[in-house]
Amino acid sequence: MGYEIVVFLGPTLSVADAREHLDALYLTPVGNGDIVRAVIEHAPSAIAIIDGVFAQSPAVRHKEILWAMSRGVRVYGASSMGAVRAAELTEYGMGGYGMVFRWYRRTSLADDADVAVAMAPAQLGSFPLGDALIDIRLTLKKAVRECIIGRQLQVTLERLARSIHYTERSFGRIISAAAEHGMSSQELSALDIWLVDGKRKQKEDDAIGLLSLLSSNSFEMKKRSDPRGFELTEAFAYDMEYYNFAHILFNLHHP
Picture 1 (cartoon, rainbow, N blue to C red):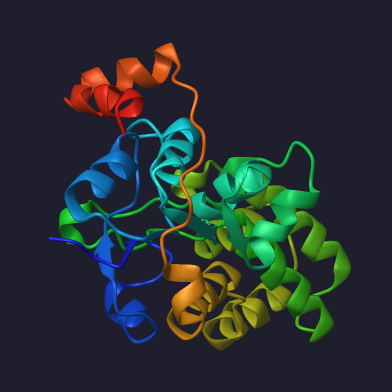
Picture 2 (spheres, rainbow, N blue to C red; picture 1 turned 180 degrees about the vertical axis):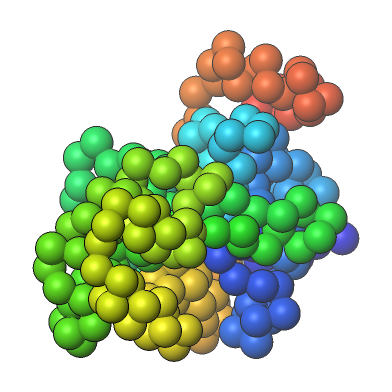
């Protein structure tokens, strides 16, 4: 069955919330081989990558995104893994959207882990089990602007956040670590209360923005593009063999 748009989504936004902005086929966070599988099984005209895996299993390779675009599929990215890959592949035709994407585009040596969060298994909905560093940093800047905390505590909390592995990174863990280091309990308590409604959720905002754009910008962004050239590599051929997509290799030379 064909779908106009396939979206790879996980902890950044729930599928229920995503559907309020775009009617599409929603799949779990993208990993190696998933883009090729989506093109084969669903024949979309466009693919949006929001979330992806990269530690528990192999991340989506650049080459399979390029392969999808070579078959006329438009590919967009935002928020998390999508923003990272879009920043890396903009010059090759992948579309990027949002603040996180722009940050990766202009920040050399930016760490992929800045957008990573631990998430529940896909069978349980891939919901987040922590907070992404990029959202933490933006939230702390906002807290300083609103006079909830001082600049010194902001710097300390950012340093603590970066020192915690992404699988365990959360505001609760950071505040606890700061308290153990003797930081102001009054400021920390004020921050903890303020976070209930004060958090910046830039990854979520970017995801909603891309989905809304794909929904409202209708035809041009969602129609199939002209096929692009594609250079077969040994690594891509190996992946295709591994995922039982060997027939794709034949089609590369016999479109």
